[in-house]
Image 1 (cartoon, rainbow, N blue to C red):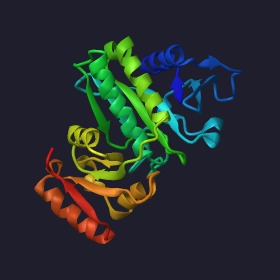
Image 2: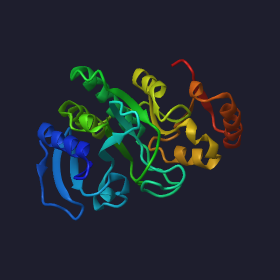
Image 3: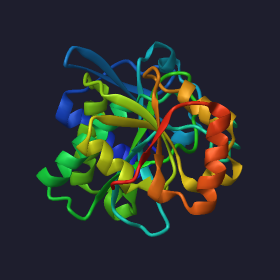
Length: 271
């Protein structure tokens, strides 16, 4: 797990991990201040770095890790309270860290486990004002190890909330210790924070990794879709279209693109 001193939400989540799960400080590495814990037979390290997490492309800990979880704030224009999870990486240019045209490996089941725990914590901690949601794949880093972000959004009030930090800290641990394996999928369509995909995943045995929102369709090509499929940890992920989140003109272009791929897909329309 990676936190940063330069992010109030990140520090809040990291402090909650240390207090709730028995992390103890170890000798600091070249990566930064380091803590460790053994939980459900897994060795979990927490590294606290400096700088924005989206630009943390290289840490020595990455090479020996099965999974990397970034603890982060979420920012949005409308300032809505959010608990979110998503895969990092860039579908196109590298505007905010990472490598252009390269996405991280998506651990779909781990992301779903984080969101399931967020929904539980929302009820348990009376965080009814918060929406729990998948986000589309975006920003850096672009890692060759399975990676995800868990986030508190979207203003200073939420970033400093003890209850929100508890929810996301426990979600991070749920992702780190996930053993359930359900059908993995790559999703196309819908908004950046996608309630239909979230509801479908949390109510059904399906886990989304990479999500390509509709706003990316004007630049989308078959190679990008195939790249997201290939960069999914689980083998042979299903391709699912958020049909209600794709307008008529976009649907026509998407069907032409999918013909080029010649990959089976199905439509999600009931949510």
